[in-house]
Length: 130
Image (cartoon, rainbow, N blue to C red):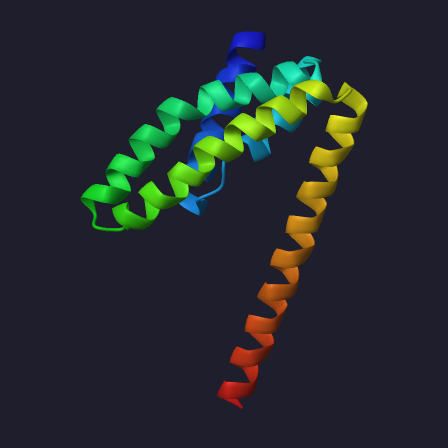
C-alpha cells in the first residue's frame, strides 16, 4: 500500500503542479507528514528532490507551447538559487514543530489571498455583466 500511496500522491502533485503552476510541495509535504509519518525536514527535503523531474517535464511542455518567458524565468531562477541557499539553511536551523507551523501558516495565508482575489474578480465580472 505504501508504494501505491506514494505513486498516487506523486500523480496528484504532478498534475496540480503542471496544470495550476503550483509547486508539488503543496501536496507532497502535507501528505508525507500526515499520511506517511515523515519528519517535517525529511518531507520538505524529499519534496524538493521529487519536484525536479516534474518541473523539468512540465516546463519543457509549456515551453514548447510558447507559454514560458525564458528571460523572466532565468532572472527568477537566479534569485531562486540564492533564496534556496538561504531558505534551506534557515529550515535546517529550525525545530520541526516551528517549521511545520510556518509551512501551515504560509499555506493558509496563500489560500486566503487567493480566495479574496477570486471573490474580487468574480464580483467585478458580475458588475460588468449587469
